[in-house]
Amino acid sequence: MYALAILRYRKPLDEVLTVIDEHRAYLKGLKDQGLLLASGPLDPRNGGALLLRVPDDSVHATLDLIRDGDPFTKTGMAQYELMPWAPTMGMEGLNSL
Image (cartoon, rainbow, N blue to C red; front, top):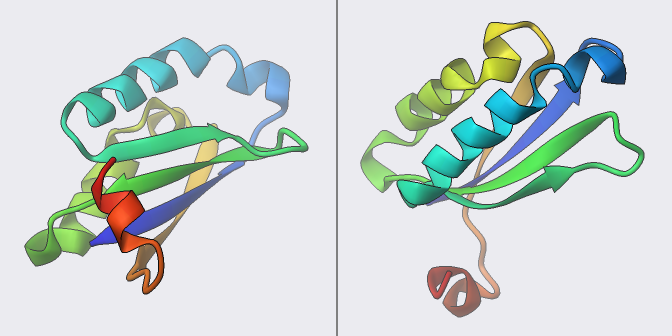
């Protein structure tokens, strides 16, 4: 199963940037685990987005853990909107990532 996560900053950007290195290190760990496929800031820079691959048998539990483990969540810098996603086109491209 795939999922989209939209992060919306809850603090001014200059405050968010004080935690950006911790957040990016956390995302690298998710990528190393095979959970994160892509990530990056929105334009304008008021948040970010994640493309995730999560186990079919624990979608919601895994997404909750991802959200709750993020330094952005722990410090109140951003809130997550989590959306499990079942794409119907382009699966071969996604599965090759």
